[in-house]
Length: 590
Figure 1: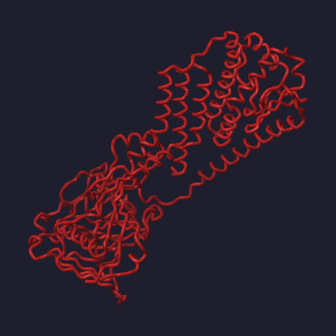
Figure 2 (figure 1 turned 60 degrees about the vertical axis):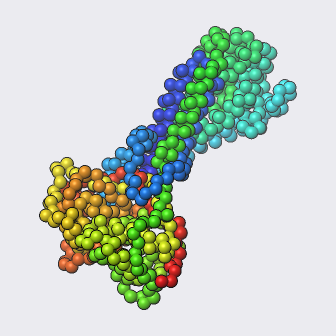
Figure 3 (figure 1 turned 90 degrees about the horizontal axis):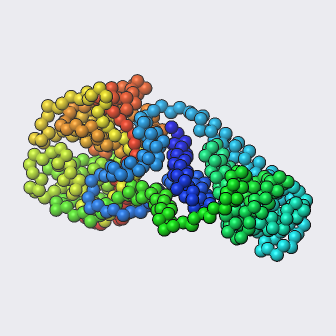
């Protein structure tokens, strides 16, 4: 599903659910005053203008958790996941059901839907405008009346019902013949009804809902809510008129006379005397049952419902808020004993940085950004942000050695790499005054898991625990890679560099394997929008010799993993550590 269509579908689902809860609430409040139910329906209308995603995003900007480690955090709490899936079912389905590297195809459906929506908006707005002009013409054709009431009153020769026109400066519009057809007590009750609309700013509320109807004209629930709003506002004014002392039979007869003689106002934002089920209104007026004021417990329920409506989405964002990891003060016990850092002005070809046997590190003509990426476990470039421009232009030669005996003899593979990178981070902090902040960010990611028919992996005969040099590494070119003695974490790290977004291991498989993988690295490039450059090669992996297979003959990455390794690649959202450069300076002299 198109992401914009998914977001709109989520919003409509949330608004529909909110309206359903509002309907249940009005049932619980049926014995109370109509003005309370009117407010509930108006809140349901306003929800269509307030996407929960705005409140979620607001909560997501609150950084309230700090963790003192650099381990990648790529999962959400179970509560956050459930709340997120309920609030965004269509987006969740679109993400979880997608596969990487789907061939790009033009889908005209979003454009067709947009065009249809725009035509509907223009049609509805045009109809409102024509009706507004009719009311405006009636006001301009009227003459002033002096009735001793607090708003301007006009007498109109038209046969429109009595109504209040305008929002900021309301005008009471009365038909010229109203005094001939209604008795003075009836006229007084009708005017009291209209003044009630003015006091409660019913025209403003109606205009707001008219805007909702214009934007969401395609949703039947919006029009149903509009009828409920009009119904409850008229009942609320009826209750006020009766509480003010008008006799029920006089007031009811006045309403019947108005309905019999005059035409209903063409706009709901012109609050009149009609506008709801006439027979039910007359029955309620004649019954003259005193509506109950809100008691303590119902006030508490309403306050709680409002708090949940506002705080719930905010809480989702808060739970998923970025996790700030404090790691700029990292001081490993082991540091390079001898380290040379020199600015390279030769313009020579860049040489990949290398971790040497024994824990040494060397790099020729490397940018500071490349050194940082290597130091922080070869993270892909799109997970690192911040820093001045010179970290991508100035290049340095680095040669560093650990103290004698600091690295156990024979230590190889990942244990060696971890120690060396810890020392490299300390070197960057010491010489470049580098400070890194690791912040959790929700973003699209991929997960590798075992496919339906089971894995197709060959167990490695290498003893990686003995420190084999070939373990945990890949060689080859970006379309034909081989790994000897690699585990699933190695594979996930490799694919993170190519897939344009983080890849997590969800296979649950332990041990090491010999892997050979061929795929079309350029297939579906438009889907990897997270990457900031052409698909990056992992910094310390070399391009192997040999003839590359024809790129067009290779499958996409998801298909290759399924067919060749028996693994499945799925897409979803999750919390991922991103690295932000807080401070970095050009290095001090050796």
